Amino acid sequence: MDVTYRIEQKRKLNGPFPGPKSQALAERRTKAVAAGVASTLPVYAADVDGGIIVDVDGNQLIDLGSGIAVTTVGASNQAVAKAVAEQAQRFTHTCFMVAPYENYVELAEKLVAITPGDFEKKAVLFNSGAEAVENAIKVARIATGRQAVVAFDHAYHGRTNLTMGLTAKAAPYKRGFGPLAPEIYRMPMSYPFREENPNISGKEAAERAILAMEKQIGGDQIAAIIIEPIQGEGGFIVPAEGFLPRVAEWAKENGIVFISDEVQAGFARSGAWFASDIEGIEPDLVTVAKGIAGGMPLSGVVGRAELLDSVHGGGLGGTYGGNPVAVAAALESIKFMEEQDLAGRAREIEAQFFERFTALQKDVSALGDVRGRGAMIALEFVKAGGIEPDAALTKKIADECLAQGVLILTCGTYGNVVRLLPPLVIGDELLGEAFDVLEAAIRKHA
Ligand code: PLZ
Image 1 (cartoon, rainbow, N blue to C red):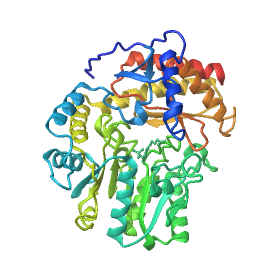
Image 2 (spheres, protein in one colour; image 1 turned 120 degrees about the vertical axis):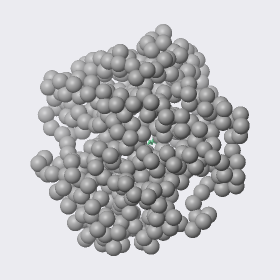
Image 3 (cartoon, rainbow, N blue to C red; image 1 turned 90 degrees about the horizontal axis):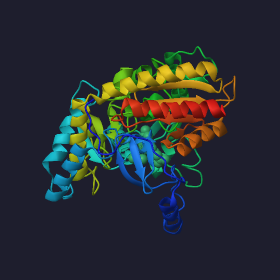
Image 4 (cartoon, rainbow, N blue to C red; image 1 turned 30 degrees about the horizontal axis):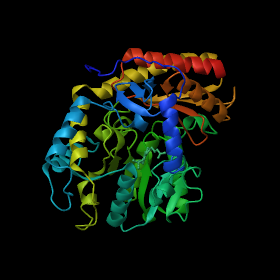
């Protein structure tokens, strides 16, 4: 990796944390910003580059969150910033449904080329991950003439009405926000660490879900099966080998559209372009967002041409979908990922992570599971010796890291997973330092 940084890649805490400027902003926020939107950090960002977030008081934090798996190429990647500025100076918007433009077509060509699946594909662009998921379901329903949609335990697919119904966890995402969309069925996931029978294979876990689908819905009633190839918000769950291929195969046998939600796992994050590549599956449709555009809001659905083309003209769209500034950022981000082999970088991060934390696991019995792929990696904490989730310990560890200037996020149905999503442009030294801080926090509290 050959990256130059604007900001010195050093962790630095000056005085109180949060500092006075962040505290003043927090007061203003309380009066003006809706309470329903919460933030992990108590400090306000002023400048971000590589693996460092500088706050308004000049503190420098190590970023192991990438704005939830978004700033894969960095939050101020200079090539991306230049492409954004140049496009903004030409035009910021025409609406692709009104006056189309070239870079939308170019990005569709690129997405078709890099997504899994050796068949004719097309793409359509939107703004957010949830919007991509909603549209993938619309496509599947119209293409099959069926209504039922299958999602899995621990799934996260968004916060809009349809996607909150697909999301598994009630609080904070769904509770009180109903009525939820009908015709959504939830199936058992392959979650190796939490299987009652620890020897169950991926294929057996798939047969368990298939039997439930056959009995509870009927294969010929299902429009789509949607699944994250590595579950994100639900706990960075990597299904057992063989699970996804068998579910995908059964979908095919039953004329069901298999949708891989790669919103979080996609774009080099997992150590490949897409996590589906590693799992050896060719989804009918793939949803993409987050890492695609270096921080600009952009998403898409990519997949079988005949499925996407089963929608009547005017049936898909949206004012901002495929905004030209966001698309310019995406084209530059993808080029950067290719030139710098960021998927390879993600695999290096994976190796460093496993070496360090599987060793730590031998000393810390509360560290139940060390898992993930690429730079989408996690630690699951339990009450010592068993598998009972320990959310309180997880929070203590995350809070300790924050206080030491390392931003880490938690996730999981049981709130007991620390997840690491560093920008792939982070250097080894800074990453090692962040691991030191995390390891010390674990040893202190576990
Ligand atoms: N599908 C797999 O991970 C977004 C959500 C954070 P949007 N994950 C982060 C939060 O608490 O809101 C996500 C995802 C997967 C869909 C989505 C939704 O993407 O861009 O947030 O709509």
